[in-house]
Image (tube, rainbow, N blue to C red; front, side, top):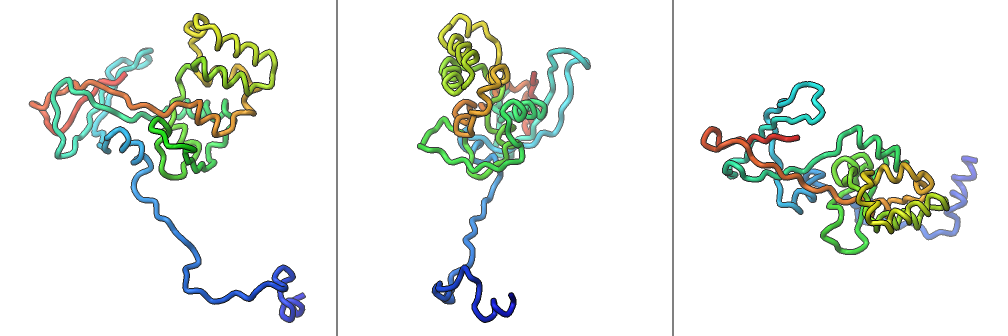
Length: 232
């Protein structure tokens, strides 16, 4: 075989035009700089800061835990007592693992998300992200479903009893108002729809993560370079 290859070349290249030398580089490389959350922070006019201290304000095992958080401010930032401090949250690892299971996705899959149309209310991501990163930093996982979202789930659901139940809930405002299940709960309770939830559908169903706002509990008179927050 070696002799034949040397004499006649690879079968797949027989009759093909000979390659001509080129000065063009063999690869085009785009360097992605900055932090993965830069696009999300830029949308909300936020900047990175450093947490310098945390602590618990409630006894261990208390059902409504409250924590103390101290944040170092950039040099040019000033504040007043009772100002609002905005934070980009992250979903808890246990919640993300549950979402992975309910949505039947691989957390290590890398997604390259590009909006089909310009929109200011979409997910702010400017680079490929893993499913785990997406579910942790970019989407809400505990929102209750709207009637419109339930209608989408009903239309996708191939199971007649599940479809009927979802349609009934979507059309009953009173029942929907008293149903405290989140979107993940509803999907988990209607397993037939899980196989129909493609990523474009999921990204329409999962709301972009929202900033959280906290009142500053410290005074610049005692420390103008740090703010204290009480977080529950």
